[in-house]
Image (tube, rainbow, N blue to C red; front, side, top):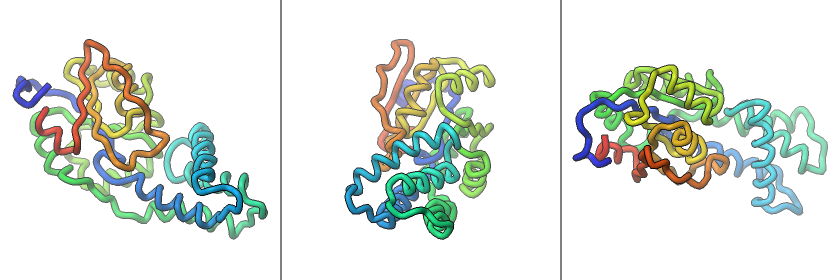
Length: 237
């Protein structure tokens, strides 16, 4: 679909938040770099430590979900697995501080997001759909100043096919005029297409490694677009 093909009918745009509307993963990457330096492992390379951390994060997501609480647990668990010295209460707090520093960052809105949302909100039905800890995500949404562009906010525990199916049912969304827009192939694109709605990938140079995946083949009844930046949506909607 191109801008010239838009027929004026209102579309429903489900829009991701982290690394689509504002920066997020860069702060985690900086914290991880500090953690690896702090660990200073004598036999594991930085890349090997990161691989262990990735595995531990996958485990922590199952138990603690997404967000800073889960990330802090992953850092502590990784330290315990790799450090030759026992973890003391002081070490425990030092490690958790790497995660908690992330919460202190202001919400950094990505380029041209507010004006693009303003334009889209005048034409279409916008729903913010983000996953993570409710308190964390709510706080970022409030601080972002973008809340009023959306008719609804959905903070979900996971973005998978059942979750998208639930959103489709809740809002009675027709597949031909509903789109999921986000930076993550794993959470924003593939499950949305599998659930029967269209999708738009907005790549981000620092998408979390656990959110990276190969984009599936688009079903013949659906459409999948790729835009270079969020403002690229203006050419299509």
